[in-house]
Image 1 (cartoon, rainbow, N blue to C red):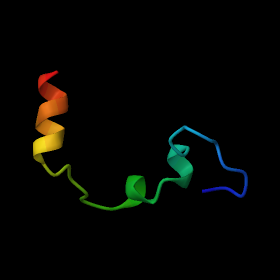
Image 2: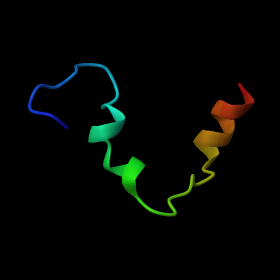
Image 3: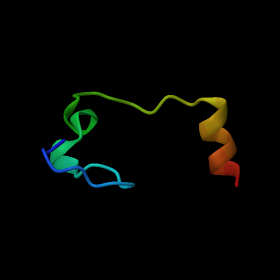
Length: 38
């Protein structure tokens, strides 16, 4: 993340290292399934 934090917000896509991971996939956890159902 950049030096200046954005309090209460997700990082910009350019600062989010998960966005640059090749072949990354979502893991279907119970919490994720619960949120999708809501």
